[in-house]
Each structure stands twice: as C-alpha cells, then as structure tokens.
Length: 459
Image (cartoon, rainbow, N blue to C red; front, side):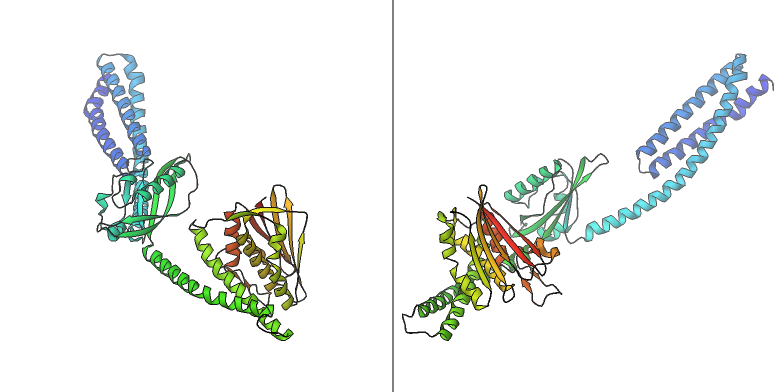
C-alpha cells in the first residue's frame, strides 16, 4: 500500500472515525460513571478512557505527520500501532457496554434496597437520627416531628448539643455516650428527657450503635429513641400505689407481731403448748411479711441510690442472736437449722440490713428444703473479707436459672420438681444490700442436692 493511499485513508476515514468514536466512547464512559453512582470504580474507568483516547490522538497525529513528511517510521511502525490501538479501543468499548448492563442491574438492586431502607426508616416507631463523628445530624425520620412538633428540617445539620428539644442533662448524657462509643466502648441503653414545642416534658429510651468502615474506624452513629413517657407514668403510678399499700400495712403487722410476742412471754396469761405453737407461727409469719414490706421499700431506695447505710461495728454473735427465730421456724417445719462460726469476728456494716439479708437467705433455704433436711449458716474470715454462707440440702436450682435468681420478680419452675422456686424480691434485696456495702453475692447449686448462697463484706 502506497503512502498516498494511507494518507487518503487517514484523512477520509481514520480521523472522522476517531473523532466520532472518541466522543461516543466518552459518552458511554460517562453513562457508566453515573450508573455506578460516581463511585471510585466509575472514576477509574473514566480516567482510563481519557488516557486511552489521549494516547490514540497522540499516535494518530504522529502517524499523520510522519506520512506527510515521508518519514518511514510513521508508515512502518506508528501507523500499525495506531491501528492496533484503535482495535483494542473497540474491544474496550464492548467491555464497557457489558459493564454498563451489569452496573444497571446492580444499580436497580441497590435502589430497591434503598427504597426498603427508606420505608423502614420512615415507618419505624422509634425516632432515628444518623450523625457523623462530630455529632452533626445527617438524617432523621419524621417521628420526632410527630412526638415533639419539630420538623426534620429544624434538626438536620445541627450538632446533638444544639437540638432544641433536649434538656441540658439529656445533652450531657448523649454526648458522654457518643464519646464513649467513638473510643470503642460498648454503651448500654439510657433514658433522656424531652421538652416538646409546647413545653411539656416527655421521656425517651435511647439505643445507640456505631457504624464503622472496613478498617474498624467509626464513620457514622445511629441513634434510636423510643417514647417511654406513658410507661414511665404507669411505673410511677404503680410504685406510688405499692408504697401507699405497704405503708398502710406496716402498722397493723407491727401490732400483730407485738401482740403475738407478748402472748409468748406469758405476761397476759398462761399459754399451753398447742397455743404456743400457733402463736409462734403467727409471730414468724408476721415477721416474714414485715420483712417483705421492708425489702420492697429498701429495694426502691437502693435503686434510686437514696438508701443511707447506718454502719456500726458489731460481733458475729450479736448478729446470730437476731436470727434465733429462724431456728424456731425450721423446727416448726421439721428442718434442722445450724449456726456455725469460726473464730471471733468483728463486722462493720448496717446491722439491720445484714440481718435481713441472712433472714431472707435462711428463710428461702427453709422453704425449699424438704422435711428432715438441714440448713447450715457459716460465718468466717476470708482474707480482708467476712464470708457468709447459707448451705442447704434442698431442691437446688437449675443451672440455666442460676444467673437470674437475683433478678427482680424472677421465678423459676422446674418440671422435675414438685414445687415452684420463688425468688421474688427477697434475693433482689439481698443483692442490692450486699452491693451497697461494696460486697459480692453469689450462688452455687445442683438440682436434687441443694444450694450454697454466699456473700462477702469488707471486714
């Protein structure tokens, strides 16, 4: 092929095809870039297209000039390279067409996910706030508008501490929690207080989660807020009613127990053995019920951190003297209660609370130990602690329930047992009372063999 024919081909066909093809190539690349939401993959493909076309134009210009200047290298080397490059461009174009179809499919898939996410985001019963690592609100659903009267536009772009519906205490709680999660710490749910546009106080329960990148670094924070105002009101009403009933019961119970104890002394007349046994049952039952009432009152105080410990220093012997009635309770039910003590022990604590803890543990053991069984109380020094142990030969507690026996109102029913293990409030009181002293409480148990409840207090 002569140089004249090559020149003609380049001018009449090559350059027009190159210009039209490059424009179409650029258009297709840009469409692909948009289909993948301007992601890094789309940017790389667009950059590659620019580089490819720039090389094509450079080779075309060199080949054209070489041919017009009759430079042999332009005919023998540059022009064939130009043709090969052009052919490869067509192959890449075919690949881009395939990528575009796949990108369209992926794009549709992600749009469907986004629509579902948006639907969940909007219909969620909780208010949802999406913030960046600086605490700036990036997105929010309309639930807060329904609750508080603030529009979403009034929230977006603002820092958490500038949100108009949060009290100062709530802002401090949210920022503290936010900071802990940025440091990688796990944060439990917590309560905050709202003030709606009309000035009414509302309560919310907050659950936060941190969104991280592939390196594990926090990039977003998702905050979900539930309106618990009605639940808080009902709980307060329940507590108020419970405490009103309890206070009304205290005086009659005190009178019943006092009268029974007076009868047992014989000061109001002789009492035969049958009558004495009945009066002892009345006295011990009244004391147990009175202790239950006091447990409920003190549990509430300890949960609110309002219980003041009346610490004194007393001996283990003094403590045991207050528990003599427990021995009578066991005897009435044909169960042996034994108090063991190792060495002279001095204890500094709230004697009333420690006594009631032991009364609860011993009563619980008596209740769940069969006739002829044995309950043993041991008090001993354990390093710089005083260790209390209540060991029984009773029914035992199923292994799966051991972690919850100190939970409030928790009850266990084991199908292999004939009776119900009722851990109610007594064990909850024990746990809170021991922890209020800086001590620890625990339980070990085997079904059918018995249980060991233990707690330790600083000596």
